Each structure stands twice: as C-alpha cells, then as structure tokens.
Image (cartoon, rainbow, N blue to C red; front, side):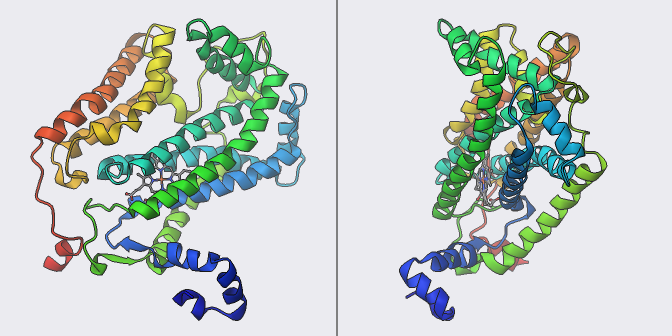
Length: 404
Ligand code: HEM
C-alpha cells in the first residue's frame, strides 16, 4: 500500500487498493518532482489544458441548439445569439476561446523553441505536441465553417480546393472530401461530425503528451537536468498556486475579449449568410492560420505553395535533429538567443502578410519572411549548433541561486 493511500480515509483506501487512481494522482500531480526554477513561461501548458476543457464544455452546449443543415445552420446560430438563454455568452466564449487556445499554444511552442524543450530526451513529447497542433488546426478550420456565413463557405471552398493541386488524384480527392461536386450540405454535416469528434482525439493525445512529459520530466530555463532533490520541489502546492495565478491573468484577457470586443478577431463578412453565387472580395482565414496562408501564397505555383505550407509544419518534426547544439537553453547560446527573436518576428510578419492582398510590397515581404522561416530552421539551426561558442553551464539548478 502506498504512503498516500495510508493517509486517506477508508473509502478512498478501499478504492485505491482495487484501482490505484488516488495513488496515481498523488504521484503525478502532487509529488511530481518539478524543477524549482520554472518561470511563468511554464504556465502555458496547463493554461492550454484549461482552455481545451472550456472549448469542449461550451461546444457541447452550442451543439444542443445548432442545426447542421445548409438551410438552417446560419439561422440556428442567430437563434443561439438572440433567443437561447445565455446563448450569446456561450457562443462568444467558444468563438474567442479558439483564439485564446491558439495564442496560449503558440506561446507554449515558442517557449519550447527558446529553452530547447524539443531536444533529447523530449523528442516524442514534442512530436505529440505537433500532432495536437495539426488536430487543432483541422478542428478550428471545420468549426469556422459551421455558422455557414460567407467566410465559412468560401474559406472551406478555397482550402479544400488546395488538394486539387495534387497531380492525378487531386480532383477525385476534393470531390470525396466535399461529398459532392461543391461545398454543400454533405460537407457541412461531415465537418460538424468531425468538429465534435476531434477535440476528444486532442484530449487523448494531450494525455499521451503528459505521459511523455512525466517520463522525460520537465525541462527548465537553465536547460540542465536536476542533480538532486535540492533542485526540485513538489508540483503541489508550489506550481498549482503559480498556475492559478496564471489562470487569473488569462481569464482577465479572455473575458475582456468576450465582453468588450467579442467580434474584434472575427470577420464581419461571416455575419452574411453563405452565398455560393457571390465570392467575397477578400477571403481571409482566422488570424491564427494567417502565417501558414502567407507561406502558401508566397509561391506562384499552387502545388508548390501547398507543399511549402505543409513543409513549414512537418519540418518542425525533424527540429530535434536539425538543432545540433549540445546546449538546450538559449540562455547559454549568445547567438541563438538573438536569432530566435528574428524567427519570432518573421512569424509575426508572416501573419501580417497573410492578411494582405497577395500583391506588391506585401507579397515581397511575405516571401522574405517565408525564406527566413526555412533558412532559420534548415540552415541556421544546424550550423549554429556546431559553431556557436556557448556560455558555461551552471553545475546544478540550485547553484546560481546559492552562489548569491
Ligand atoms: C492542447 C494543447 C496542449 C496542451 C494541453 C499541452 C499541455 C502541456 C503541459 C501541461 C505541459 C507541462 C507544463 C509546461 O511545460 O508548460 C506541457 C509541456 C510541453 N509541451 Fe505541451 N501542450 C499542448 C500543446 C503542445 C504543442 C502544440 C507543443 C509543440 C509543438 C507542445 C510541446 C511541449 C513540450 C516540448 C513540453 C515540455 C516543456 C518543458 O518541460 O520544457 N505542447 N504541455
């Protein structure tokens, strides 16, 4: 019998002896030895988990009042906004939750890039994260189609049409995806079905992500492994309280959006019902997909653009091997810590370029940022790792603190 179940009451002990869920939780959430130097950038994993739960909870209530049919979808969403009790609130929390989810996860990824959290032994943890990212993109894309506004319809048409660039089988694939010869009712129904399903697949992959995390253990801002018990503290109460503070800050930003600017991040055009006979002047995806949209449009050839866009994500899967540096954290890599910020800037510029018309200066700037994105990952990372003169690493996590 574990120490934890001995401390519990008889009911918990009875259950725990037969199914050790309490010992498991005690071990993984309470005692989990966590490096004692984690900064606030380590809050974003748990924040992502909380936003995921909020998305599923609000989504289930929305689905109770939503009708996945081309003749009723738009009106059913308007009914949610006007007639369903607190429907407007549930919808705005869900809609803006998608933006918060991507914001939190993007920060989570850039944290990993800065502190080298993708490097051994955390490669599979990183891969599972990337799978989550791909699933999130698919889910968000299909969710955006459901209100069946102009942007829903035309966004779905443009993005699914990308598959037609594949030689030979492209056209049949698009027809198969649509379930017909245009984006129509079968498309809407399958997107609804998958939009409901995929978040639960994300939950399953998040579980694996956490198993991988608890196997490899958390990295930390110094990027060195804990040497003794002195370098770690129990997760609870130290990080549960720190995560709660982070949650408070997140909720302030999130609720400010929901209550004061619920449509700031959306497109007005999507409040116009879908009309297959009228193409909007501009078709733009949501902000969190814009960098990838910019990469897609930076190539004049359709197939080339599609390949480059998918490559921009798949390349991240080989990052643990592209980065040849022995040192994890950018704190000890004087050059990497500067080019890292150029990379962040390139991603922001890509986001900006994705929202512009693909012509003139905006197109050129988008192309330059695309070039830097690939140059950074494919050329700079391997070369820097070999030639950069890194700063000496401290002997342990405690040493820099105790020395002062
Ligand atoms: C639903 C989305 C996600 C959830 C709920 C989630 C959850 C978490 C949690 C709770 C942690 C531990 C706390 C922390 O280090 O912040 C973590 C760590 C980590 N996550 Fe995620 N994650 C998600 C997406 C991603 C993505 C998209 C990536 C990368 C592409 C990623 C890569 C990592 C890495 C490398 C670590 C280890 C960090 C370290 O110890 O330094 N995660 N994740």
